[in-house]
Length: 470
Image 1 (tube, one colour):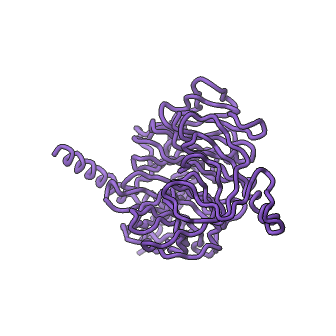
Image 2 (image 1 turned 180 degrees about the vertical axis):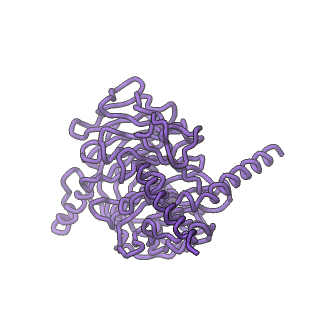
Image 3 (image 1 turned 90 degrees about the horizontal axis):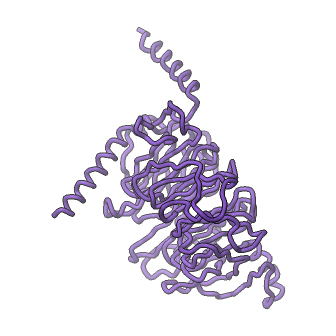
């Protein structure tokens, strides 16, 4: 009885939070689209820009469907209409409703995935290539444009990956990254290792392989035609595979996230359940260049490297906090010394990501259902606008509260400033699937105060003029 009453109280609290947030939507957002998902999605990523028009752009969007087994798990490629700033009709915002499907999101293609899709990452050098993690030791590479469109019905065979990256000795489920400067893929797994591959090796191997089927590629990569995926639950999805360039050892527990240095293909970092943040340099070997033994007081779930300032690294943890490190101050051993601890979440932080538009801004999402937007330059300043109240943590200037349950992933849109896509797993709250939201906060929240006041003054003058007319 007590458990039932507690659950009802928690649901009532969630509903109250959501109702309050919904009443503020017309004030806080320039645009917001809500898209209910039949199944939870554990990852969401923006793809390439397809078309630019006067009032909105069309862009690829990558999602996943984590099913209960009644139908196959899928990788979903959708077309998304991204409404441009200051274009969304006020009526649409004010009449925001939890419609079953958003008119802005349309499924384009379905790939039947061998196992659930835990992570999706796109290759910067080729916008049609994505990598996925599933419940196996392997990384799967897909050419989403060349892949045939499939129907996810019970008994359907898995789609065939264009390339399989082998090298892990145990499942690699979440830690996955693509290099910004070269076609390199980085992964971490339960085998406590970080593994590096080059897709370029595969390209050169195919060219050689067509002339000599028995040849092997440079960089230690080996083509294995008809190589099956690893893992007990994998079906007979087959495809060419390559081995790693290098395997890096240094973690003492599962590696949960990895990230490349924005300006170097040889430098990257990783975090794991051993509470460690490790910096690696492939030029000096396969052991840690710097190992921060106690970056947090609990498991680390996520990491991101600032694309504007390569000295700044963010980490998120099960201790509910986000920490910012300066790599110039890091030394191996002992306890890590972050520049600052951002403590605004009430549950484990699942995802952190720097804004592509402003060097001091980043987002963090957590199991508490919030996606917080921070600006570290605001830390220590007395006045902070936006949704921050006197009790809000320093640096927090916007809080997206549109999800009813844990926000498992989000992604800033590099092609459309300040636009974010986020997904939540709503099974615990609603017993349903997931929720996809695409949103952009009002620019009055983040623009310089003098600009905002000047614009509001002009607006005031306009209102006075209109109301004074007979």
